[in-house]
Image 1: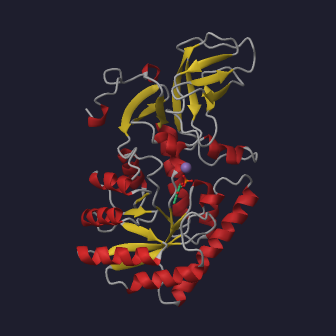
Image 2 (image 1 turned 90 degrees about the vertical axis):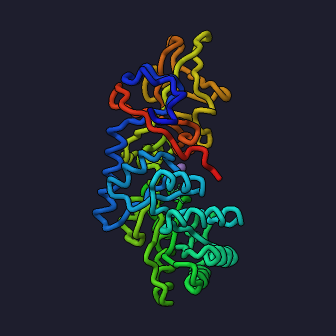
Image 3 (image 1 turned 30 degrees about the horizontal axis):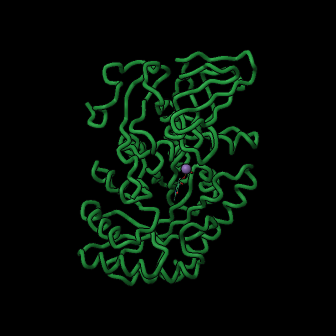
Length: 380
Ligand code: PLP
Ligand code: MN
C-alpha cells in the first residue's frame, strides 16, 4: 500500500470511477499520456529540451513519466517542492524563483549536497554575493541562471545591461557557476488570439535574444536559455531562442487555458486531462442543486469550473461556500437528484491540484491507479 493512501477510503474499492469518494481529482490517463507525447514531440522537432514545471503537478509519478518521455529535468517554484522531489530520487532541478533569505540559502546548500546539479535563478547583485558566500562556506559550486524580466514584471533584471552586469558578477565568483538565462513570458500565456499572443511573445523572445547576444559578446555565452509555458510553446519552438521549455499545464490543461483557444475559435492544442468529480448532495430547490465541491476543492482565482459531464446542457457551476458548489440549470424543468455525479474541468489546474492529496487515475470509467501528490502544500 502506498503510504499516503492509508486514509484513502478507496482502498478495497479500486476498480470503479463511480465509487470514488468526492470531491475527487481525476486524471484521464490516455489524454495525459497523449499530452506528454505531444509536447515532447513538438520540442524534439525543434531541437529543444523540456524541463517541465513540477509546481503544476506536485507528483513524483508524473515527474518520473516526464523524465521517461525525455524531459531533461524538472523546474520547481519553491525549495519545499525541490526538497520533496530530491527526496524521491529526482534530480536536475531548476528553481525558477530567487532564493533570498538566509534560511532559504542554507536549505539550498543542504539540497545541493544531495543534488549538486540543482540550479537557481538570480536577479539581484546582493543575492548573488550571498549565494556565492554560502556556497564558498559550504565548499560547493552553485549553478545560477540570470533571470530576465521579459514583460511579466514579477522577477528578473529589468534590462539587458543589468543582465550582463549580474552574469559577470556570478561568473567572477569561484563558488558560482554561471549557466545561462531564464526569460519567462508569463504575462503572454493567456492572451486570446494567436496574432496578439505571438506578437507579445515575439517581443519577449527578442529581448531574451538580445541578452544572449550581449553575453556572448562579453565572453559569457549562456549554455542554457530557459523559459516558456503551455500558451507559448508553439511560438517558442518557432522562435528558436530558448534551449529548453519549462512548460507546466500542458499535461492537465484547465478551463482558463481551454478558453484561450476556444474564445478565438481555435482548437486547443492539448486536451483537458484533469477533472474534478463531485456529487449532488441536495436538490430541494427548483432550478438548482448543491454539490460537495466548493472552494476547498477548486482554486477560485480563475473563475468557475466548467461542467463537462453529468448535468443537463447549459447548466452552470459556481462556488457556494467552502464545501459546496451550486449548479444552476438552464431550463426550469431540469433537475439532478442527490447522489448524481458531475465531472468538471478545473478553472486553474496548478492551485487546484495543490488542494488535494491524490490523483485518481482513470481509463474510461475504470479507476486504474492512485498517485500521491507528494509535494502538494510544500509552498515554502
Ligand atoms: N515557468 C514559470 C516560471 C512559471 O511560473 C510557470 C507557471 O506559472 C510555468 C513555467 C509553466 O507555465 P504553464 O503552466 O503555462 O505551462
Ligand atoms: Mn498556472
